[in-house]
View (cartoon, each protein chain N blue to C red):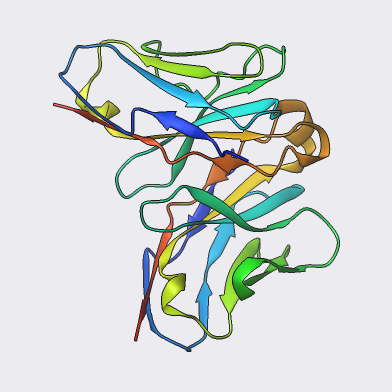
Length: 115
Length: 118
């Protein structure tokens, strides 16, 4: 079946503008994660959604970052008033719940460049 | 807080040679450990995982890793690499005691770029 998809694949924006990144998880996956990968660094956890539970937002770096998820489907990550340090690849992953929650399937990412 | 250290940022190796990519984690509490691979222009794929049981874990494409609790390490090995193994490899850890309550949040290392030369 289809994997995790993300759009856009690339986004160039000016400093101060808002951007919205989209993630379509694998159908039936109840858990969804957003990570950020800065150049030359590992993945940094941002936020986690599981079913109807309150999301784990502990990784969001500032209040300019927010994310929503509609049920167990699409998620959007919004960055307001973008800064140059927000430039990174933003990765989305999804997994089944329960005992399979550890096996995360990653999308190809959105490369965000803030000029 | 948990942290993961991948000791080598780049590992060049010739085809058919053995390779070891090193990974150490910070916490001594129960952990789940993972290796992910990212091929050029592709998303991350799970290579192998350690949850419990045997400390030697086998994954896809002939890779294996050994969990060493006393040394807090989870090094990745392959006895003979191929050109197609050229990729970036990420080690990741999660606190197993929190895993199911707080979701599968993973802490990643900075990655090791494996470059296999003919």
